[in-house]
Image (cartoon, rainbow, N blue to C red; front, top):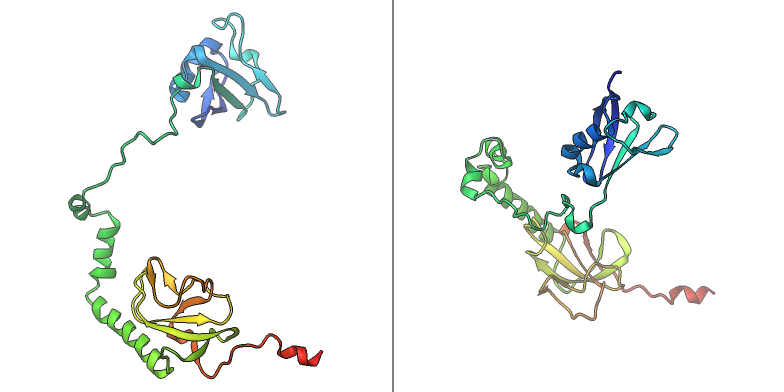
Length: 241
């Protein structure tokens, strides 16, 4: 009889294997051990057919009973359960005891097929000879925005053209805690608690006190509109009731 492809499923592995119907159950157990890591005597084997029926693959004399006695069909599932106590099983998913390999920096720099080597070849990031001038151009652009928009500490403003996000400028400058940040940021204390912080990022406080939760926000200069933006009066509309 021709071999039949089955899905062999155990706790630590799932794989497609070709099963020969002329094998005995004992032969099957031996062949499953290197696939599942479960000793033959500790295997509980069951066959899940296309009709979802589950049949135990076992017999009183497993040396003589052949797999052709079972309804094998292509891509049916062969489930193998490890009957050993948990303390005796191999836990291949637990990597806590495996020492993580960290390649030395000197060795990594010598590799020709690494991301670092690709960046060098493409002259990206710190390997770009124009990087210092590009960074300076970005900083100059932010500084120009600050000056041209009249952004100064103490002035009233609104953020992102949103009337609900009016406030007072409390900080203008670099914010080292923002990843990849260069150039000027504008810290605004919003009138309403619709911001992202309380005037601090990480362990650095740029203005105010911890009581002003959600009143602080840091944005780039192009999102700040300086002007005579008075605080919103929630009771203003009451006059029309």
